[in-house]
Structures are given as C-alpha cells and as structure tokens.
Image 1 (tube, rainbow, N blue to C red):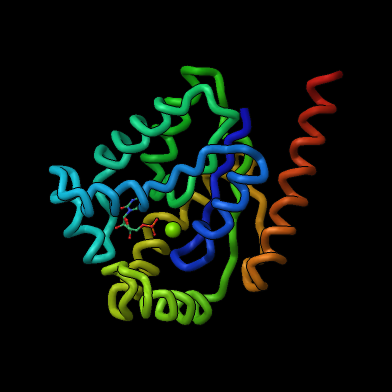
Image 2: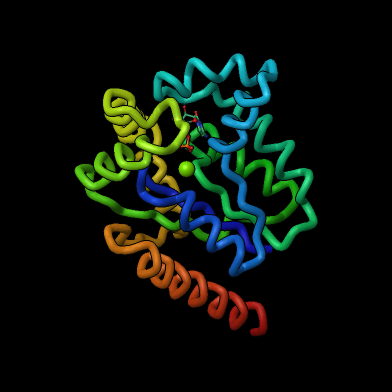
Length: 199
Ligand code: C5P
Ligand code: MG
C-alpha cells in the first residue's frame, strides 16, 4: 500500500495535484473537503451540521471529520493506497489517523508539503471563486481560512518532520511542473522502499 498525505494551505493546489497523483499511482483520492461539500449538497444531517463551519472558514470538529474519513477509507480498504487531501487538519486528526492505520499495520508513507506564497494563494482562490460554487472562496473567508491554517494546521509540519516523512515541494510553478516534482519525489521514495524491502 502507498499512503500519501498532500499538505499545504488552502489554494496551494492540493485538489488539482491529488487527482493526478491518484490517477498515476492508482490511489483513492480522499478529500475530506469534497466529502463535506457533498454532505451539504445532499442536505444530510451531517451536511446541516457542517455548513456553518465551512461558510465561516472554520474547521469542522474532529469527530465529524474522523467519521467521514473512516467510512470512506473502510470502503476502499483493499485499494492500492490513498492520497489524503485536506486531511489531517489538526494534530488530533493526525494522531487518530496514525492509530487507525497502525491497527492495520499500514503507515502514512510520505507527506508532500506544497509551499506557495500567501499573495499567490489569495489570488488563486479569488480567481477560483469567480466560477466555483464554493461559498468559502470570497475574500474575507479566504483570509480567515489562511489564518486557521496557520494556527491549527501548520503545526503538523513539525509533527511529520519528526516522523521523517515530510517532503517539501515548491508549489509556485505551473500545475504540470509541480506535478513533475511530485512524481520525482514519489518515485524516489518507491525506489528506496523497494530496495530496503529486498535487502
Ligand atoms: O479541504 P478544503 O479546502 O476543501 O476544505 C474546505 C472547508 O471544509 C474548510 O475550510 C473547513 O471548513 C472544512 N474542512 C474541515 N476539516 C477538514 C477538511 C475540510 O473543517 N479536514
Ligand atoms: Mg481542496
């Protein structure tokens, strides 16, 4: 199994890159943001509970996120692996993910840290807001989301650095170029792992 986390601030291109990574490495794209938006669209109970948080740019409580994640991950437990997009967002979520995977003796293999300047993030999200139906791609909420990222999500960088899993990728360039860098990093990891396992 290959489990990758794609990490980075809102607007760093996680969703775009995840789709490509999922296709190339035959992984399940697990975006908690997409799952939540789907719940809202379907008007489910969970959808009603989470809409407020999404509209305000705040984080949905960990237990709701973990439940969504667990259901989706269990559905695909026999897959070749996952690309986790927009998850974990908090240390608690990261610890719970580790626990969930440890039980099955499958680790998170690598964490891709996509680095993009704040001005560029804002520009991208405002651009996306013009034709996306996302209620949270408006300027005041965009600022809020970036602040929430800095306070609650950014500390995960150290968490994964300590685990020796963090790989930083410059995300300022065009989609294709960023994807190429990601593939180089993932391929190097796979090749090292193959060598280690055959020793
Ligand atoms: O990941 P994405 O940017 O699509 O998430 C959109 C919104 O969904 C976040 O701003 C937040 O309100 C909510 N979310 C969350 N926890 C996650 C993923 C998404 O609270 N793990
Ligand atoms: Mg996204």
